[in-house]
Amino acid sequence: MAELTALHTLTAQMKREGIRRLLVLSGEEGWCFDHALKLRDALPGDWLWISPQPDAENHCSPSALQTLLGREFRHAVFDARHGFDAAAFAALSGTLKAGSWLVLLLPVWEEWENQPDADSLRWSDCPDPIATPHFVQHLKRVLTADNDAILWRQNQPFSLAHFTPRTDWHPATGAPQPEQQQLLQQLLTMPPGVAAVTAARGRGKSALAGQLISRIAGSAIVTAPAKAATDVLAQFAGEKFRFIAPDALLASDEQADWLVVDEAAAIPAPLLHQLVSRFPRTLLTTTVQGYEGTGRGFLLKFCARFPHLHRFELQQPIRWAQGCPLEKMVSEALVFDDENFTHTPQGNIVISAFEQTLWRSEPETPLKVYQLLSGAHYRTSPLDLRRMMDAPGQHFLQAAGETRLPERCGWWMRGDYLNNSVRRYGQVFVARGVIWWPSRWRRTVAIHWQRHCVDGGSAG
Image (cartoon, rainbow, N blue to C red; front, side, top):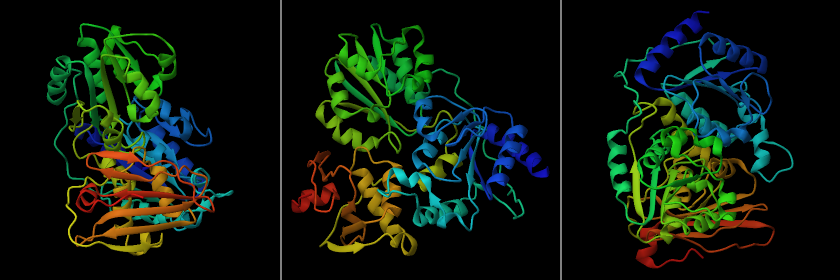
């Protein structure tokens, strides 16, 4: 097939440039499956296959993908023909090496938004799968606007755009990169206390933790949500790598000079706090965006317990080049760039209600509201975005000032969920507890911290 020859050439170019891309196959089930197999046979790689059904070799279910975080693969298939697990999709993108394709299998393009989504059973509070038109329309907008994504639709001519060559990429050699080296020096001379390193995926957090362990004079214990996700850390730590699961570590009397917690935001805060209190020095690493918990919320809520916290951030990608198209697309699709509170609220606020239909007519407003909520919560995930977009019984309020950007927002929903009323006060999030409303309603509130400091408002 001429298409496969062209894709093979483009794949070689992507590897030289250190980037990854998305390739969408949209059509009937058999057509998508057959074309995915042809891609797998034409392009050498690991071809991890994420699907609820074990349709192919190297299969992993979406729910089990968490155990693979920290590992790396070349090329993968994500089967979303019957349901779209957004968190698993994001996690998969973070495991792919430079030069990889993420092949996304979708239903027939024109029928997709009316098709029940099996993943909705996890977040809709409905007994049967529901259609998710707002999420589908949002994702369609992102995909069609992305010039780097390739959309291959059944019964449509395949078109592969000419991509202007980028600068050749030089992969990491294993030695600390300049940004890592600077942080290593600070960590190695750090007095007793707690340090937190946050970054987006692919910035070398796990490698940095392993490099630290290999260089310290004393001992270290590593803990993480899953040992399988610490492969990279173990590689860099070498013989000094020693892993103990969080629960087992808490139940033991093990001691070490350092505790290293990989993906700390994925560990329950009470358990994490007990572990940290037992060790003279602790390094916490966590992803700043998305699917293991919101890194900014983790810093401001959990890490606020430690007034002398040493906070670091890695910004330069290591596992792929700066400006990787796949990373950009996933961030836009799942709204990983949460509100960073850079604007200062001005003037009087106006309160207004809106419904989910605003995702169609004026998506900028609910996007800003979700970003505010994401910045104000410790464990916001793509599941919350999907619930906000399409779960029934949702009600929203926003309060905007003269900037017309949301400064406060309220989200009411039906369902047997924990109710968190959260406010941002200065640099700290304060959980206001669990509130049960009549008819099993849940309320979620977020307030721009600068507005709170101006008028003393309450999160209620």
